[in-house]
Image 1 (cartoon, rainbow, N blue to C red):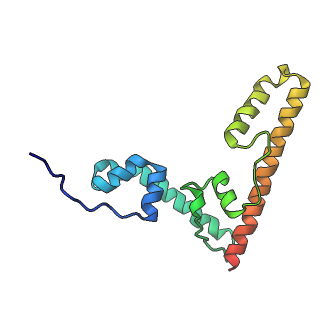
Image 2 (cartoon, rainbow, N blue to C red):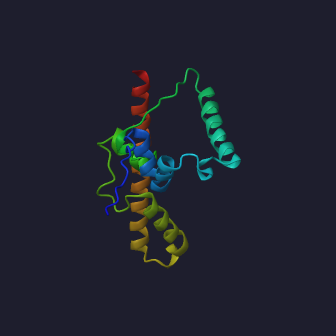
Image 3 (tube, rainbow, N blue to C red):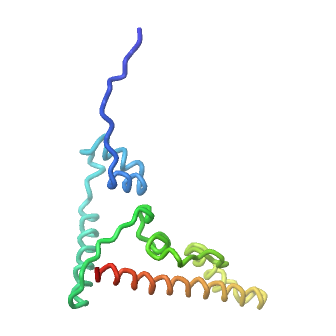
Length: 157
């Protein structure tokens, strides 16, 4: 005797489902298969945090007369709005390639090493690390400036 698996319609692919899957594959499964699960319902504490984020955005727009909300998303963000995801998508000619320190985690760890053990490091190593950290910070700052310029161009159109 063979058992048949009942046919069921697979959920369609959408941008929101792709984003949810990129952010948390378990939540995507729950959303599709058990959408009423209590675990998917936001707690009062989470609701308060989300409301606070909206309030910050509204308050920020009051500081810029005539300011507008620019709703920008690019598939290359990969579900993240971190500078390292947004910058290559919106300002592709600005890269961290070739820098001795090319990401925030490494920069944080090396800064901690410099601060905690800098006195016992050979002077040349200490100077080299400091130079690498400054180059990384310079690139981050330039990235923010260029990103702001790009967002202003988008707002003007």
